[in-house]
Image (cartoon, rainbow, N blue to C red; front, side, top):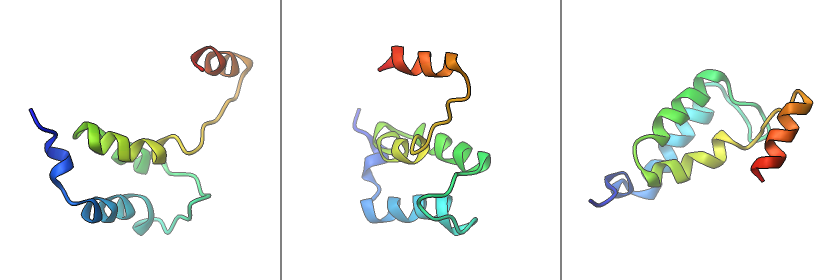
Length: 78
């Protein structure tokens, strides 16, 4: 079955992401996403593999490691 999410033109998809990430909160690239914006991006990523590939860099642009266990889990993942 073809990826229907990829059928949306790339320019339109960029506008959608821009709205979700920037328009409502006025964020800049270096700012943290709010939990609502992360939730909306995560929901968008479930539409298709193409959308997931496009949303993933925004979702994981910054990670927070708070404990030694967090660091160990990240290290084991890599």
